Image 1 (spheres, rainbow, N blue to C red):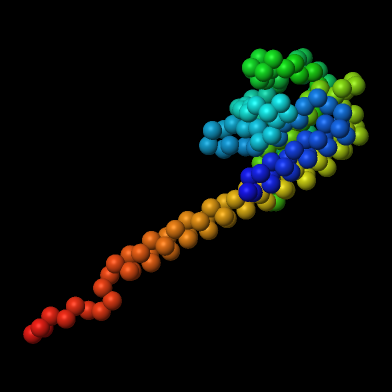
Image 2 (image 1 turned 90 degrees about the vertical axis):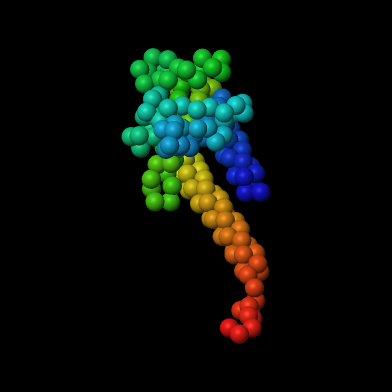
Length: 179
């Protein structure tokens, strides 16, 4: 299924990011406009994370549309501590990149947590931007494809309903003597 294709792809992004950027965790958040939330589509450790789109560093990168590199998350006033409290994880350093779709609109964020050896460097920023642009476009294409497939399924169901309805109607006009 496409869902598992996307999951497999995101896992590859995760593996590459953890290795190349030498950090402890990665989260890919997608915007949920109706809830005004960012919801994790992928998170190292597996549990779903939901964060308000108007709070935290992820929210700031999403709204402002540019990368944010934070050396000490706990000291940053924008840091949204609730997730660490829920998960028991302690965020030290954070590199957050907006994810853009096909029309350059921001659709979510890629967040890298806890550089193992110090803080995220200029090189890390370059790598994260590249990874972010690939991830954004791939996610967007997948989402559009899923919508298209759902639309096809609905069209198919409607056509089926039309055919059934037609088969219930008499084929010829009824013949009534003297009429």
